[in-house]
Length: 415
Ligand SMILES: NC(=O)C1=CN([C@@H]2O[C@H](COP(=O)(O)OP(=O)(O)OC[C@H]3O[C@@H](n4cnc5c(N)ncnc54)[C@H](OP(=O)(O)O)[C@@H]3O)[C@@H](O)[C@H]2O)C=CC1
Ligand SMILES: O=C(O)CCC(=O)C(=O)O
Ligand SMILES: [Mg+2]
Image (cartoon, rainbow, N blue to C red; front, side, top):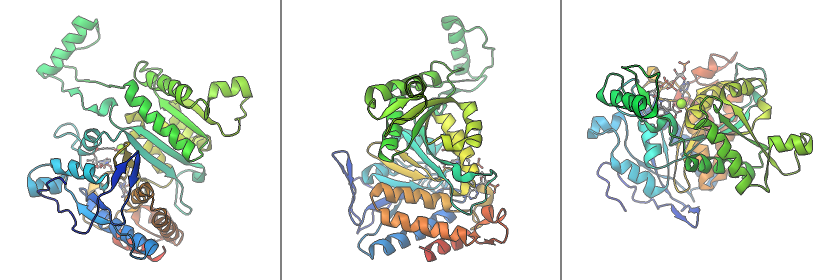
């Protein structure tokens, strides 16, 4: 076991083992968690109470999560003078499965996103964000129940790789001159800032492979490759081409391309086949609003996936109930789609639903389906009873607005 200077390993917990491509989950797994910045502590406290109550109710004390707090963000900086201690990454690796609250990232300068750093150093290459409707949640669209999509967002490449040079620096100017002189790029002005957008065949294919495998395992109808390949031909366009290539090479039996569907089957999907299609990203934003029932699993590059996640979350009731997980073959760290919502920090006010539902994904990942189902039941019932936090209360006539902690209790009482 690694040496931990700041975190304490729970005395009674056991380590999840990864063998032959599968997790072996003990009855008392150690699960590391980061509380998060801003509203993170309020949300985490509420969510942890829900997870513990669900596990207790589902397994009558036979199973239990041995929580291990690990540090990152403001709490780590204030207490240990480091934003992301190495041991935090070590713990997520050693114990295999973890969960985190949101962490602050400064805009336009300062340190790099800790969220993005964690995904990259752990090579958590798929950001999986399911978006579905819960009955009774107010939505800005007329038929939110038609939204049932799972976003697979590439999580390690694209403009998130952090390769940027600030305008006016010697590095930026050197890059400008290199592109001018060595590559014949004429349009770059002096004082231009530059960023790189790396998209690799390996990174694209492993993400799309995971999305197609998910579609097969969960009997979904289609996988849509979302890209901006008309403009960024060799990055976003290649992502699309590699997607079709992968489907043909590795999933020929289980998939059919949209083109072949119309050429050979007049649009009628052969029994058991998953349709592989693609859409240009700007068009996709109107498709998810106008024809959401035609889309199912989405596989996309990092920035498109970031934008799509918040837009789709809004369609089914907002960022308060938008969960996610950062997943590789060996490790998983679950986290909400939303950020720290700093103006509400410490007010016990915001919706803990996204972290609670990220925990549901985590329990499913552990194979603890019974506990996951209890949480969904409790959350659905609390919303039906109109016992909700401010974000939903402001949109539901006759709702009872409750605090973060009270919402968690309402979920627990209804499990
Ligand atoms: N993975 C991560 O850790 C992420 C971190 N961030 C970071 O978070 C910080 C703040 O980012 P910001 O752009 O303000 O985005 P946020 O997602 O934190 O908040 C934007 C708005 O979304 C609504 N919202 C967010 N979370 C909740 C919730 N739990 N319950 C109800 N409503 C919610 C609020 O809307 P309203 O005001 O209408 O009530 C809020 O003002 C930044 O530093 C950013 O980098 C951002 C995204 C992800
Ligand atoms: O890391 C951040 O601050 C933002 C990340 C983000 O927006 C996301 O993961 O959706
Ligand atoms: Mg985002």
